[in-house]
Length: 564
Picture (cartoon, rainbow, N blue to C red):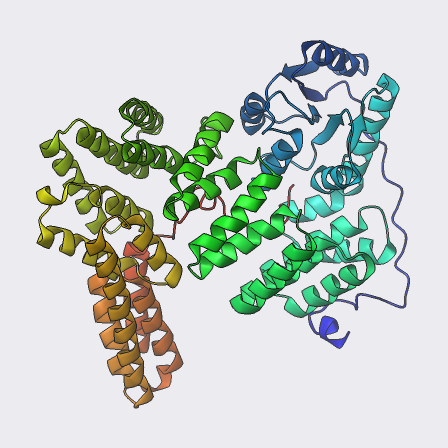
């Protein structure tokens, strides 16, 4: 317990009983509350709206489809949401809706979200309670039961108001203390408070305190989230191998825990194992078929793994789930266009390209979407045998790769398109120059290299050149590090910096800075060299974008969204 004291926090199991919390204040009346009813059955929807109005709510809206409700909830805030668990579409559930909205911080903590179900298993009730804190109401239910549930939920919201205020103010240390105090006392929401504390400890790097808390929770209740938090802590420390083993064990013991599969998929992707990453995401999608983000990730990975049929099914589902949602990634539309081209489905290709064009028009200032639109147009030209127009568009994509603001995704799109140009119409030298430029810039890890190889899988020259670039980069880094080991650290930094500025390779630039910092005492101009490398990275090394559905959010896999 001494370790916890070292970070300025009392031991987890204090011998001194914490003071009991004051009774929660009475919830406000419902006359000013806004409500949304999400129910596919017209009769049931009318009854539910009437029940809410009878409680005093004057502002009650309704929706018959989860996809429409998602759009409404993305734009507006409601005090109460009453949502059916089941919809006419078997791939959509109310649970998926609330999970996704809260994961993407589109539903505030203050909103009472109650699921209405015909029946519910223990696991479903537990899942709903963990996601929304408000539970499941089983049909048939009385108006009195609904009113009691809403009032009680609003009371619970008020009980956690100090914690939420601390989070909103950025007072993370105070929030952790409030969480631990609630957990010590065994108050209501004790486990939820513990989970919030683990998220804040991960952000603050308080690994000893995190391990102590999670092990205590795990020993008391064997809560899967506590075990997953320990996995995430291993990842944060850089222990990818240990995290993978622990996560695989968790998945084997908790095969229905979608967040664990989500995390495992990202771990596999981190080490460049696209096949295993796809298997993990496929499992997560089977558990949560209405989750747009996981379906996008699964479909994109299936495309990279050349499982075209699965990719088409997943990405078509994404379009139907919510093309107008803020959670939708336009990369989905581009990949569908590529898949239609590969199938030689001219009608499907034309439709997908038109969807891509309209989507890009909605966000006319987006250079990313303009690149996607240009790529889709190249495929359309190819399908109509308009080779001059196709080559012109492909060369524009090649020029985009040379821009400072180009990302890994820009390089992948270029490779996907160039690999589909007719070989007789592509100069071997021109292709080699493009692929080397992409490889030398973006082969910074095994995962990125494997995605680049997958993007150009249909062209042997692309595959070979990318692998050669990866080897050349590794050899150069080894040579530079040998200079440092031989007592010539400045030579190593200068070589890495010069090559990094030429290729705009983030790994070479990062290594230059790391060597300069480590040997700063022996490099007179270390600060200037570090500043030069940092300036190049800021100008020309964009944040990594890998997979639709993953790149949309900075949320840590398996993490709890801290809502305010």
